[in-house]
Length: 451
Ligand SMILES: Cc1cc2nc3c(=O)[nH]c(=O)nc-3n(C[C@H](O)[C@H](O)[C@H](O)COP(=O)(O)OP(=O)(O)OC[C@H]3O[C@@H](n4cnc5c(N)ncnc54)[C@H](O)[C@@H]3O)c2cc1C
Image (spheres, rainbow, N blue to C red):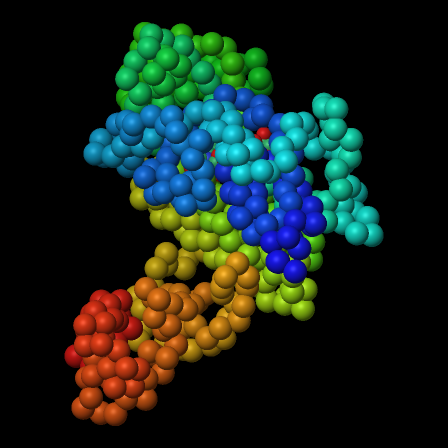
């Protein structure tokens, strides 16, 4: 039977229609699965900044309609540790519009969309029954469940690693229509991110440490935030000639890693699997990273249950690795603000999650050939890869060249034979390819200088 026809009899249900749920649904559809996605609209207005790299990730995920009306990049000012930098830009995106565009892409791809709030989920003998609130649809049966409800996904009794508890308070001010721009600035008890949208809406977001910020009760919260904003030089262009609307929205921004992000018939993707500190401005990017890998993992769990352990290992290792990478990027950025290093907000974040460096110098002696799970033709398979002290998850191919035979050949090469000559004779590479690869090996410290 055509594998695509076979897959279409399996109903996979995705909960949540943000970038992660959307990307997973598109990936599953491309593998021929029947996909139902249940989502309710985002409950608050949010603008977020994305870089060219995130845009590329959204394109690679297959979104077209969602990206059709994105604004041009606008100036971004950053004021950190007393220094101001206005060289960067970011694209300010309206998250509700992005989600609506994702919905159109899903519809065009043939994903069955149900608008409603996910209620109770009950496991049964052949999958799950998902209750839908606020809609006409009855319970939906899932052979396989994808949890993509972002940070609001229930913990479901799974063990989670949490960083310092953090809250971001988002306020809307209204001014005259203006040129879009954004700014970030650190202050004694946290950091601020501000954006002005072309229709004159100003998004003013202050991020605090939950345990020590000593925030007043709700009635005084807006005044408290506004008193801080008035002291921040970068906030002035956003609040001058604008008025607070009196609406404030709290978003939890604690970094959270789910220690078990995949089971035999379920998987968590995006923020539901790991949510990073918004300081990195990379949330959408990391959400896409897990979502782009999930379809191959799900395909393996469904088609080759004998490889379930391998598929789960592949996914969990990547989720853990990415989470720690972003956590360390955040840590180093917090540590670069030295003016309030002993203040609780900064002191806890400059040391979490550990003291491991973000990157290690590659040690040529650490190169090892091992068998590890990789994605191949929409499935997880075990292949020989090369690990290094800085690349513990291994590299399988480089521009289509399998790296394990390259490292084996170089490690067993006779004295006096150059690396390029060795690749030509042992692996039959053309002189051009062998020379290019040799340059890469030296540049990335896979070969000792002068060896
Ligand atoms: C304060 C803050 C600022 C941020 N700023 C940025 C930024 O500038 N740039 C950036 O790249 N990232 C930023 N992020 C991170 C970014 O928002 C997330 O990482 C990203 O949206 C995660 O995508 P996702 O698809 O996993 O989840 P989400 O985008 O959260 O999508 C989840 C979807 O599930 C739906 N849903 C939730 N519960 C239910 C339910 N019960 N039933 C049905 N549907 C439901 C929601 O409505 C939503 O559509 C920020 C995060 C925070 C907290």
